[in-house]
Length: 387
Image (cartoon, rainbow, N blue to C red; front, side, top):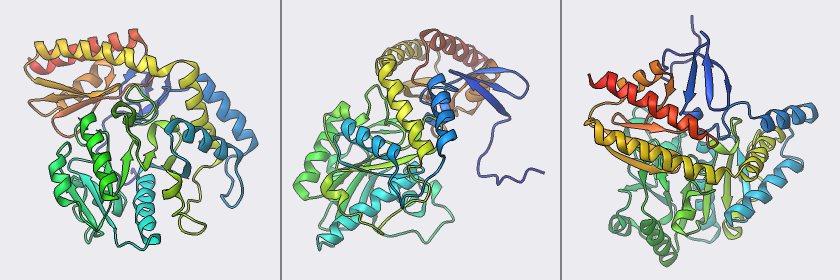
């Protein structure tokens, strides 16, 4: 009997090891991994620098309570502040926890200011996590079924619709929470001009802007952060997934004025920012710099997009390509589950983003030859499903 709760509709596949952009199942079959742990395995699997860094840190210390100063945590906070332009970091274990912290800090910020602003506005088709607060912020009803009563103080508007946002924003609005590129909701890109206009509107109305970069942050879109494509800066951003390269870590980054709302005892995390997770994150950032990973993301994205565009022209079931960097989605006229299954049969792991969008999330250091091979596998799979 399998004693694991069935919270996932797991595929008939058991993965036991990985190396680079490949994983191997318990029967010895090899697959090109274009899921990457759902945008987690930034450097692929078993990157030598990651293995060495974690081995060394494990010999020194795995965990240290946040009752004490943690050197690796301090170092990581400094690097993230430098990269993001924000000032202070709160460490936790996941994207959901980081978004929970973002919701809490925005409300506490206005509480401290004597204001009644508490409402969070987010986008339809968004995904911000499965805690009660973050699933309420999520703009998808399917994740909320059975969990009522849900917390109050949340509103939703369509992405890229500034007039809708302006219409619901009022004197009780604390923050606007957006993903620059919706991953789980269908790979929907927030237009740069929309993000610029939202930033301006928030400034005019005295509202905080929170950007959820859990899936897009740390190079996934070809820039270190997706907000860079719009040339803006948020008051708060959240990170997780790719930052740890496979180890759980979440981060809330905030400007100094907002960060002041969190004082001793107002929020916390037992495991957040422990030495091992921070070592993993520091290694990811170092490898991104040393191996010029952002340039590779841009080049491999162009290569993959060109190949996928050609396939769209050949196969009627493919209707559009959307996304940015190495977070790409193919809109399909029929459900994508059969295509995902066919790809797995041919040795390529991909995933869905809803019923009609096929998503590709390869490691950021994926090679030119691996992208070319993935396109071959994908074409074979389309031929199989289309006949």
